[in-house]
Image (cartoon, rainbow, N blue to C red):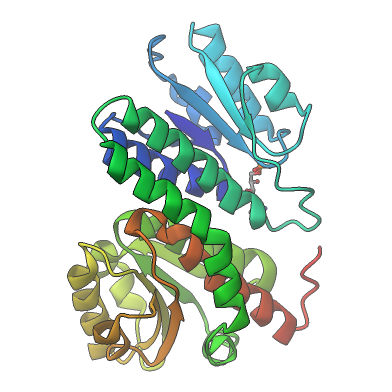
Amino acid sequence: RLLGCGTAKHAAEIGAFLIESLARVPSVAHISSEFRTNEPVINPNALHFAISQSGETADTLSAVKEIQLKGGQVHGVVNVVGSSIARQCARGVYIHSGPEQAVASTKAFSNMVAALAIFSIQIARSRTLGKEKGKEIINGLQQIPHLIEEYLDDQGPIMEAVEAVKDAKSVLFLGRGISAPVAKEGALKLMEVAYIPCLAYPAGEMKHGPIALLEDGSPVIFIVPNDHVKEKSLSAIHECRARGAKIILIHEEDDIEATEEADISIPVPSCSYLLTPLLTVVPTQLIAYRTALALGCDVDR
Ligand code: M6R
């Protein structure tokens, strides 16, 4: 079980996905603020992770105490050294992202995901993951900082995306599988720094509600890496387009098929699909940042 709030919860969702996919261990992410009051059943043999940048989030701290009170152990995945959650857990890892100066948690998100990816690979290696496959994913993880730099050198049409979202009534973020939490994270960031109402859904849920909001020109930001659920995401894009939505697509650079579906296409370097959140989240952060600046918001407050 992985617990967190906001951005940390989104990292927890990706961690749960990685643990299940790689290690085949049932895994679930919880919102800390719902945890204690929902009277959870605690399995003392389960692994629990409390994920937090500040290490001071009261909801996450109270969830940690609840688990400990009921006989469970909690490992911290925390940025701030010596913080309350780190001390309460007394075990786990520091993610060493350096101080988050502004409200928006960005580099901490990346390091939470990276730490959980390393844990997933280690536990998977002790179970079903072969040595070669394990090495391949670790090598992929080591390449991520270079790939992020490569992307930052050529960020794609971020300003076109900003033009499409800055005056919108609302912005819809969609992604499937491991990209669903990235969509949530993109929406949170745009709301948090540019004050634009945003919705995020797993792409398959689009037709079960949010489609009602789409009209001519509605911006929809799709996160679509070249993975096994891409075709399903493309069909959701078709449905949005049929209603006149403006599609801003974040995809892998070698994926020509995907670009044909987009009004605005933002490519990121390719990597193993399990690591794509570390890359696809970056353009969403830039869209939030640049939109906030375009609207005259103080991104540091
Ligand atoms: O310090 P924490 O990671 O525990 O904070 C949890 C959330 O409050 C936090 O992630 C919030 O959603 C951020 N400001 C997002 O950028």
